[in-house]
Image (cartoon, rainbow, N blue to C red; front, side, top):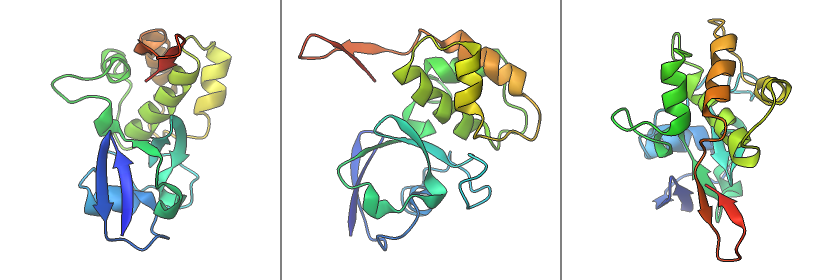
Length: 164
């Protein structure tokens, strides 16, 4: 049994500790936003956040995730109430086929949580590991720019701002 915290909820999953997170998300938790693309951590369609950092879930074994916070695209918002970054992707019509888009959004979310107002060069550098075969890169860039600065913050007990 493996205990995972995904989108703020704790789950006990009967999975081999070497099982890639992607399979547990899709098969056990019914969270299908992250997609299987290459299975080698080369395309980014499976990207999720672990403790706020973008990781390829297809090559991340669940044994490394106990005690860590996993966030998937489903944890950012819903179709009825999309999160700020999801809304920006919709407004910029950044999705074409939709296969890479969840991974793109999650990689961008990680960037904006750590750097709310990145430059175009920083966005491009951060996003370059995720591939889009439809060619909507410029719209993706515009969506990330649009969302910059709109990532929610909360006052941490220490008095410093903490990104969510």
